[in-house]
Amino acid sequence: MKLSRKNGLRASAIGALVVSGALMLSACGSDNNSEPTKGGDKTSAAASNIKCDGAKGQLLAAGSSAQKNAMDLWVKNFQAACSGVEINYQPIGSGGGITKFNQGQVTFAGSDSALKDEEVAASQKICTGGKGVNLPMVGGPIAIGYKLDGVDNLVLDAPTLAKIFDNKITKWNDPAIAKLNSGAKLPDSTIQAFHRSDESGTTQNLGKYLSAAAPADWKYDPKSKSWPAKDGQAASGSSGVATAVKDAEGSIGYFELSYATANKISTVSLNTGAAAPVAATAENASKAIAAAKVKGTGSDLALSLDYTTKAEGAYPLTLVTYEIACDKGNKAETLPTLKAFLNYTVSEEGQKVLTDAGYAPLPAEIAAKVRTIVPTLS
View 1 (cartoon, one colour):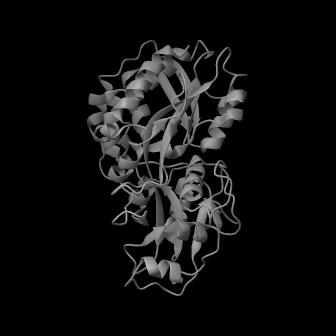
View 2 (tube, helix red, strand yellow):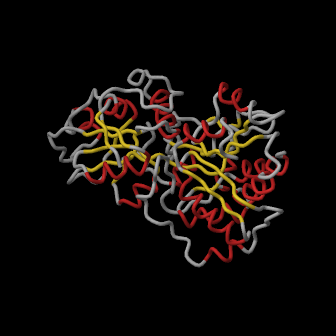
View 3 (cartoon, one colour):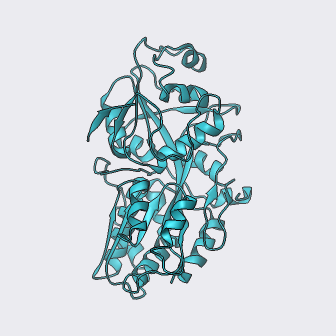
């Protein structure tokens, strides 16, 4: 790990989100610091239902490691079912994955945020007669992890978070933090705020949340995948940020909930204006994701999230992670494998294995739409 000094869906869809434990999302350069996911002996059972449909050879993919732990499960099951197939997914960050996709180096990319207009335009050079489309696969909370001895249930709100990550609040006993944590023994020590050093959809989603929920305190471009603020400390990938927070007293950082769970890192509950602070859990994230609306058109299923929700129990700092593929113009030699693999990941079987890993599977309404689109890829 390298450290550098630096600065909707309808409500009816809620029940369709199956949740279990802590969400296993991550996003990064080399995320080998996470603990192995627990799938146990269910691999053979899951693999037995997979349709290979002509899948063969090697399939290269790269991008968000918000999907890494899910990919580990999916790849293991798919390769067990489809002899001779190799799925190679590199968790290099959303920005890196999109770059590789638009350079024709990978068949699909993983991203924690939908393609920008200019990225869609660039994809048309690779997707002959078509373009890159966003296919949501899984969603969940971005946790704010911290290490502060003696403080087990830290509560923060969006304005306070914005000021912490913008180096405007630098002490743990700052009045703004104390006001939100009555009775807590907050130390007079310096806050060590960690952020991502690589381009990241997780960073972008945090920026969107802060821009929407604390516009007076976070005035940076919410579309940026690069960390925009000055100061603070940087680490590569969610695993790097999580490890840094785990090792440094007085630290705080952001990463997918799986990294907090795997590293036993305490997480912040958000004061959203609801009756009670909302913890970062898959169930609470599902309440926010269920209100998402499809903003994409045609084969594109990009979603719009409400980062300012005050609904009881809804955790607004969430992300939906996508697979990005060509709707048309895929290479003939990899197309069968691409379709077979994505058909599996979005299938009921593929989504069910996510619950064992702690992910929140897609709402049934969105999953159904993705299942109709994947077979049409050409």
